[in-house]
Image 1 (cartoon, rainbow, N blue to C red):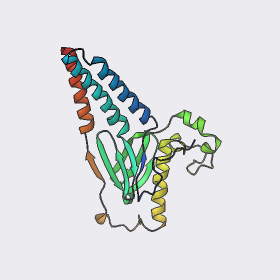
Image 2: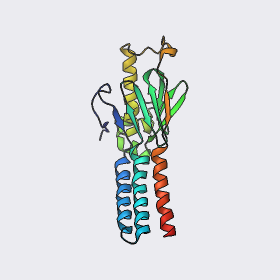
Image 3: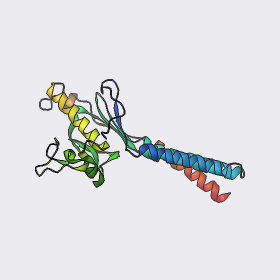
Image 4: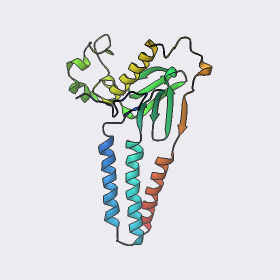
Amino acid sequence: MRVMPQDQKSPADSPRVYRAASAPWLTGFLVLLGMVVAAAGWSQNAWLSVASVCFGVGLAGLGYALYWRPRLEIHGHGVRIINPLRTVDIPWAHIIEVRTRFTVTVVTEAGSHSCFALPAAGPGSALRSGPQGVSRAHPLARTEGAVRTGDLAGTRSGAAANDIRTLWQRKIDTGELDVFTRDDAALEPVRVAYVPAPLAVTLAVAAVGVTLFVTA
């Protein structure tokens, strides 16, 4: 089954958003577990009630901070990578290459930026992709006909990487992006913002819950 981005509109209208295939059920599992933990300790006594609620909220927050919030977005102005601790905005003009060896990684002249949410698929994805997905017919096939599993079109990493490459090449072909005569001084820079708050707050709330439970 072909993996499609969550939003089918043009990047100029709305971003294409990619998360890990496991993000919905891992987030849902931790949220549900948090609710069970909170309910289990409720009405035992005041300390245990607060402890269970804090720990339950911490579990739900962990699902959000580690599995739902991390994502890759393709915008009209470039690519945004949102990881648990930082966000990176990469304008199209700075992109040199997109790799999928371990995770989807956008390479610029100043360095590489990996996406926590889109690890390369495992060997099982190659077995499920069918002959077309691993043959020389694939546009990224190597000389011997092999295709890296992270580039397979039926995987989240492959779909995201292919969209970035396709849109980047389209901008070059239409003249919107000139990678040869660009004025680097006039380009928007790659912006890196550290955003530790979601994960830090989650861990702090969970730690309060554990401390209250131990001392209750």
